[in-house]
Length: 125
Image 1 (cartoon, helix red, strand yellow):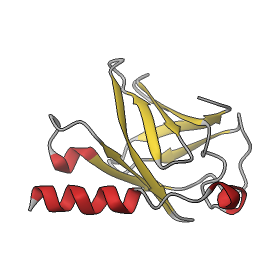
Image 2 (tube, helix red, strand yellow; image 1 turned 180 degrees about the vertical axis):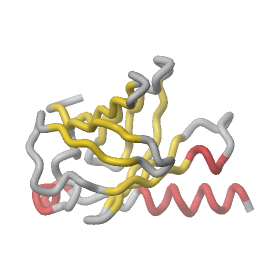
Image 3 (cartoon, rainbow, N blue to C red; image 1 turned 180 degrees about the horizontal axis):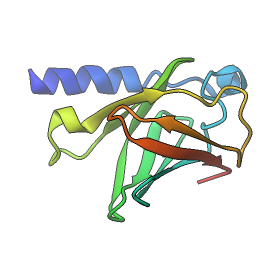
Image 4 (tube, helix red, strand yellow; image 1 turned 135 degrees about the horizontal axis):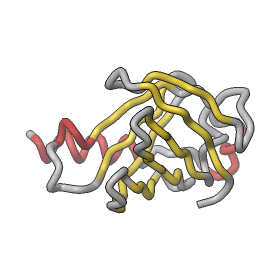
């Protein structure tokens, strides 16, 4: 069951947009760039969103992780590839507030755990 869920989510993640459609994608600001979230505690999480649907992440403790992403106009979701993390903790979806924003412009939002986070999308990886 667990393997089937992971396989299904991985397949869904691989449905990242084709390169020609990136400019029109509802998550276009983040694709090819790095989203940085800074929490009220000072902890920082960064996620680089690659056009092929993969991610490179750095957690607050400095540990690097890889994964996959998917997004629409309302949400973006991340699936962490680390098998030593419980499945429920490997999948995370957040509201997509990138529409109308520019690189380097920050905004504040509440994450899926109820924490306040300052978000900015920086150019490149």
